[in-house]
Image (tube, rainbow, N blue to C red; front, side, top):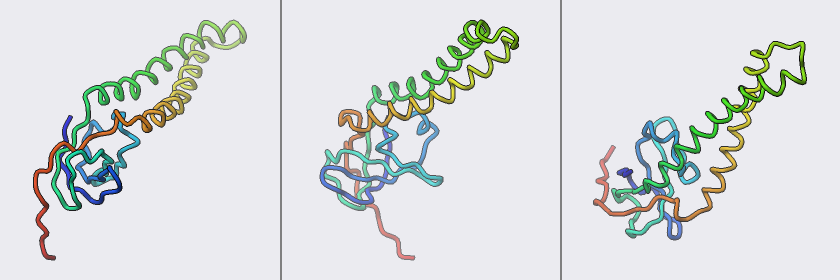
Length: 149
């Protein structure tokens, strides 16, 4: 996945780039290297192309990162929802014989689903520290022209 953006500032070997927020942002594993707002996102990337402030750059997110992030972001909660529903119906109904198994199934499914978001956040924090998952500034496309106000 590629994005085009403007370098806002450089710190060490990293560049911080302003890009337009995409719908794919919600499931990206690079969550820790990106701060998404309403009007756009600021991406932290390894400055491999030696870009400077104001440069228009191409940022590359590895497909591995994107697919892995999608599986984690959507897969874990989905599995937890189903697993919670099964546990609620089969296990909890044995311990609470007077309760409706379908209600227990729904409550356990929703409960495990909510817990899964904390698990996903912990996993994403672990990924933030891995350098190979951080996006890379692959190419400087030119300097952004400054327009007077």
